[in-house]
Length: 184
Figure (tube, rainbow, N blue to C red):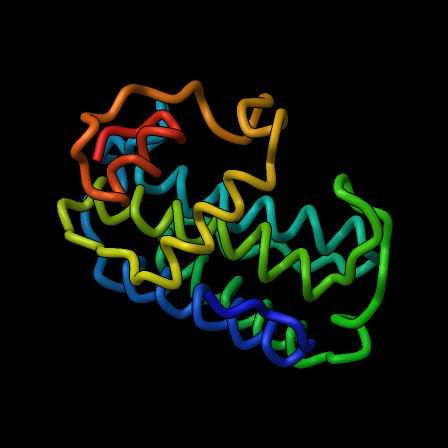
């Protein structure tokens, strides 16, 4: 299990997660299709990812212009490009702030929290579009570490809904999805 420690490691991981999410967005599908996130469509999943990243950056003093309205893939492409430009600002990425779990950098939060969001919602979006997406062993490790790291906050409003039961012999990804209230 590799641990991200340097600024470059963290940002490379975030960029990889964002690129893999981008692949699923670009694959397209029915944006009105329901997603595994209760009450959300495929478009809502993408908007959520954009909105939460934008909100985080605004709270760190780097507000982004609103993405274009209309086509989901176009809005995501504009957002993804803006995020890549911000990630390139290493001084901003190294800035520290007091987060929910203590003192962290912008890069650490992007890689660990928003990277987790990209991993999970990549699966949600793929499922909504009828695509198969498999997590790598490293991604499974990172999802599991994130779920464990949330502790008592895992089921707070806006994080994960209550877990569901997975069969005892279920594959690891199915057990992790069940912890997040999803059926694998």
